[in-house]
Image (cartoon, rainbow over all chains, first blue to last red):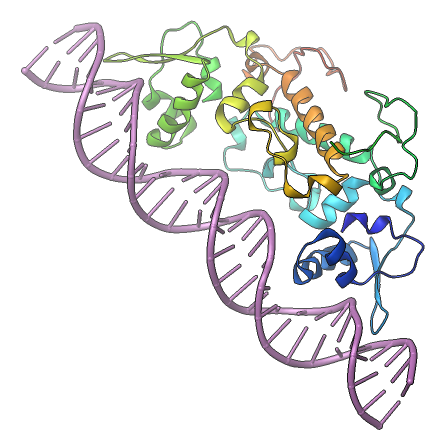
Length: 147
Length: 147
DNA sequence: TCATATCCGACGAAATCACTCGGATATCGA
DNA sequence: TCGATATCCGAGTGATTTCGTCGGATATGA
C-alpha cells in the first residue's frame, strides 16, 4: 500500500491493481486504506476508473505519518505515547521508574521514522552510486536494493 | 523485576518480596525470571532464605540485554531481527523495499536501549542537578523522578 | 523435619492481528 | 439510462501472542 507512492502522478490506482502487484487480498487493503484516507494521506475517487492517489507528493509524507495513520499513535508502552490525547497512565505510574526508558525508545523510533519519507522507499530507477550515510537524521537517497 | 537492581549487594531477594513491592502476581514473576536466568542476568539460590540476585553490577547490564532476555531478539518485523539466528525472510522479500526502514527503526531502538543500564533506572538517592543530555549515545545519569 | 524457596510444565482467558463477507453507494462509458 | 467498475462501511472469524494461573517436584537453612 505504501508503494502506491510509486504510482504518484499517474492518476488513481485501484485496489485491484495494487492487490495484484503486492499480492495481498483486496478486501484487506480496503480496510487499511480507510485509515490512510482518514489520516488525509490519500484521496479517493469513486466509480469506474476510480481508485486511490497520494494526497501529497511522496517526499512530503514521512513514514511516521503513515505508521500513525495505519497503527495509531507511536508508543512502545501505553504510558509513553506520541499522542497526548491517548496518554493513559498505568496504575503503577507512581513508583515506576521505567517510563523514561520508554520515552527514549519512542523518541528514537519516531526519529528514525521521521527521517524517511515515502519517496525513500520507492525503488529508484538507477541505483545511485552515492554511499549511504550511516547516521544522519536528514532525508536520504540510499541504495535501496532489497537483500 | 528490573528493580531488583535496587536490591543489588543486599543478598538474594525472594519473589514474594518483589511481588509485594511491585504488586504483581508471584507466579507470573516466576515465569519471567526463568528467562532472565537463562540469559545469565540473574543468579538464583534455592531453599529457605533464597531468592534471586543480579549476576553482575547494574551498571554493566544494558536494558537491551534485559529486553532481549525477556522478549527475545529485538525486531520491529521478523525480516529485521537482531539475532542472525532467527532471521526469517518473509516471502515478499523479493520485491519489498521497506526492509531498510525496519532496520533503521531497529537500530534506533537498540541504540536507545543500549544507552541505558539497569543502574540508570534505579531511583537515585539525590536527584542530580545535571541537566539531561538530549541525544547522546553514551551512559547517562539523568533526573529520574517519574512523572 | 519442616517451613521456605526455587524449579518446571501445562493450561486458560483476553487481546491483537491479518483477513473475510455481504451489501450499499458513487461514477464513467456506451 | 443501464451496467460495469469502483469505493465505502461495518460486522465477523481464526490464529497467534500476551498475561497470568495452577499444581506439584526439588533444594536448602534453621
